[in-house]
Image (tube, rainbow, N blue to C red):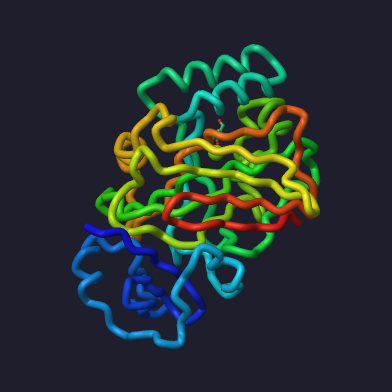
Length: 282
Ligand code: DO4
Ligand code: MG
């Protein structure tokens, strides 16, 4: 199946194709998590001639794009890349805390945690936030899978799992406070539909401070220790998702320990095929 990109706007969902962008659903259809994806792709309804064909700098010209989900929960996997395991062990304030990350990296069962209700997720161009009671904060650039109610991986987008390293480092039991707060999750700008990303897909992070790129790095899906199917299988074992879900799959990029995000920074996360998710830091 060829890859297409789905965008969500206040006017509904749009699909880009060689013929231009077409509207495929009104807001509220819950279309993005249906299981019969190939069927609705051939059932495009309202041609949207007023809508610009997306290009490489689409997010700059499209301030109206919304986060590409409606009512789905957002979950996250952790410590799926060696870089994340190392960073977590370094930030842990006590050796016993560090050991948890080493153990989960090697274990069969992955780390999975609830990240955000749909209404708390920021879209392209919106501000993400750092906690006011945290002193060491980073963005986590991740692939987010769109998973159907039956557990089928329908597509993927770019995600930001904003995290407070000092809070999590103090005690792993503080993970929900380090990860779940207002402005801690962003998704977009589009969902690439047609299955999971290939191992060669690149994830890039750039953090801009004024005119300067303060930090930049990239990784690929191939660097991930776990496979997407196993993450979904564990998540769906005993938990149902009537409208599907979004699953962040872990970060392979962590800035050096000396780095912390500041209010006013710009976070740019680029995933091959998806485009760039850009959010200022509030
Ligand atoms: O255990 C902490 C979570 C790590 C995480 O979010 C990641 O690896 O992306
Ligand atoms: Mg993460």
